[in-house]
Every structure is written in structure tokens, then in C-alpha cells.
Image (cartoon, rainbow, N blue to C red):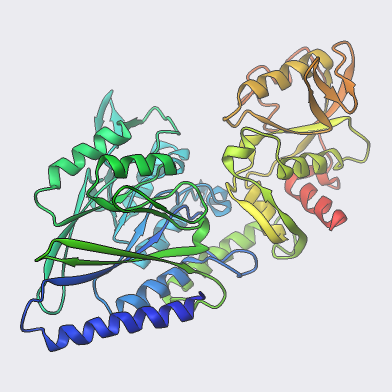
Length: 505
């Protein structure tokens, strides 16, 4: 169902309800209808794929259209929005933007409630605090706290403390009045020295216990794996609706007493939940509809103006590297997997493309190529038309490709280390290197010879020893390092990938 068709049906339903309330506004009928608009895992404020889908100004329009008919309409973010994004890596006035653009957009959209995702903690404590201070909307997390001198305390935002739980009051035209409680946890998958994670179940249960006698209904707002969401809802059976994030693909999964809902990442879709509660019978009915956000969806002009302002900043920075950011360079009939879980754990088709491009980015041949999986930051899949801008989103940090002469012994050690770090950014995506069950690793068809010297293309970041501590220019196994000239594609890994995709398109 496209947006306009859904919206007409939705507004018709709300309009009938409103008419009834006008007729009976002198008498409380005990029934109230709420509309919850849910987004999650939104890294980009502008529409993607040349404007085909997503876009926060479009989400704002959807919410505004529903709210015009039902004032009890609320907007929620189920985590992951400050990072990663291409724009977030750009420096403005000497500082990385690090989610500032998202906060400005979300403030204009008047979000009701948001929770932390694991990617909020990618940025350092000082920058996270700046984003919290800039927020005019309410934050909540039942299990995530700030460590100060080994003491866990609430993070503080521009609205005050990040809430342990949250209560929202709603009243309709005939006077039906209810309180809605919110609890929820964040997956503890991004440990940082300044973050304390409480147990996702115990802390949510504690948060629920505190408010259960003072609210009519309770809803979950979480950023967890789907299995954890379902387990949480089953442990707290009063949660008939859990609005969750983390997986990036839409789902509506039943629990013992309700559902867990997740929209598609980057606002390709939103969930619109209609909650009808009867204060007399104490019955809650939840209807959840997935709404596509695409080029048929109008935009909120005020939010669009903010998005456009930030896009100008982004385009100016990108054009310093490439002339046409929106040129379609490739058609992905099979989605290119850039999700974190894949990039950091298995060889992917996108990882092979990146490393193959690196290998071809010099004027002379190399034996193979490697890149740390953590450099792939899009945490999504690319399908259909792929633009130059998409590649910048995949590899927002850019950097040189180096041509390195490395001993076979050190190369094998590097590959073994990368494999041992599966699940982290140190896992290596590879070109022309395969695992050999008997001997360990092959370069091309042959087992690595520890006495031989290989010429390997690798990212400049990888040779700084951040992900693989012993992989530095000072290692005796590094015999020579070639820095690319400006006229070689290797001068910027993103240009190398773009040129390669054009060549095979």
C-alpha cells in the first residue's frame, strides 16, 4: 500500500472517530485513540538513492498529516541516529559534525521520545554530551547510564535527565484521559569507558515496576536484537507493543501478548501504530501499519529547509573529491552487503568489491588487497541504482590506499589476527586471498610462502596499528610502503571504488 492510499484510509478512520467525539464531547465515552509514529536506525536526514526513498522531511509530513486529524499523535525514535553517517564525518568550523545535523532536524520535527542505540556511543563522550545538550526532545533508557568516577548516573540532555522511564498523558475531545508509560533497554554491544549498561531485562523490569501502578498502559521503546525484544515483552506481559530498532529491516513479530515492531533503516518505512484504549473495560487494541516513505511522499517544508542546508554543506565537501556525487555508477541486482555484522565477521560481496578496486587502483599490479571491516560504515545493504554518494556513505572516512611490500610471515600473522577478531572492526575484507583449510591462507591459488615478499594494497588506516597493533611501518616485516600520487585512483579509496564500479557497470 503506497503512502497516499494508506494516509487516506488512515485519515478516514480518524475522521470518523473525531466526528463521534464531537457528537459526544459532553460525555466521556471511555475510549481514546492514539497514533504512534515510529522510526529507527536513521543515519541519513535526506532521501537516498537519488530521492527514491527515505527522508526525514517526508517523515515529518506523515506525522503532521495524521496529527492534523488526531492531536494525540506522537513521534518516536528507537535508537541509532547520531552515527554513522557521511555528513557526521565532515568537519565544520574545525570540528566533526558527529550527529549535530540529526539533532537539528529532530528538534524541528518535535520528537516525543527517543532512546539510545548502540551507535550513539560511537562518538566520544564530549561530542555525545554536546548532542544531548542540543536536544529539545526527551531521551529515555532504562538500562544505559553515564559513568562518572566509577559511579553510574543518568545522562543529562537539554530537557534534563535521560529518563529511567517516561510517562505521557493524553486526553481526547470528550475528556477521556489516560497515562502511557514507557520503558526499554539498549543492547550493550558497544562498550565504552563512559557508559554503564544494566541488564536489559532486570533494569526494564525495575523501570516498569516503578510506574506500573500510575499508568494505564505501558509501551516498550528499545534498541535490541529481535530475540531480546521478544524475551523482554514476554517477561513483562503488559507490553503489548514494543517499538524497537537495530535489525534495519521491517518486521512485526508476535509475542505472547502483543507485537514487536521495527521499521526499515534510514526511514525507508515508518510504522504507524493505532492504539485504542478503553478506560472502562481496560482493553487495549493495537493496529500496526507499515508506511513506505518514498518519492510519492510530500515533505514538511520547514524540515526540508534544514535538510537542504546541511546537504549544501555535504555537497561542497564531497565536490572537493568528486565532481558529480549523484551519478549512478552501478546497478546492484544482488544487494551489496555493508551491514556491520557481515562486514566485521564474514567475507562480503561489498568487501570484495572494495578490495578489488584497491588492488586495481595503482598503475602497477599488486598481489592482493585487504581492508579492515570497520572502515565500512553504512551498516546497510545497497540495492538497485548505486551512486557515487552511496560509496562515500560506505567509506565516509576515505583515506589513501597504500602499496605495501610485506613478508609472507607477517601477512599470514595479519590474516590470522583479523580472523581471530571476527565481530570487530579488525576483521579483514580481502581480495585474492582465501582461507585454506589445510595450510591457513592462499594468495591466488598458492599457499602463502612465509619466506616470500608480497605486494599488498591496504588502507592507510590499517597500517597505523589501530586495529591490528603490530601492523605498522616500523614492523620488520614491512619492507617498503608506496604512497600514491594524486593522479592515481589510490589517492582516495572512494574514488578507486567508484572508478572500478563504473568499469564493470
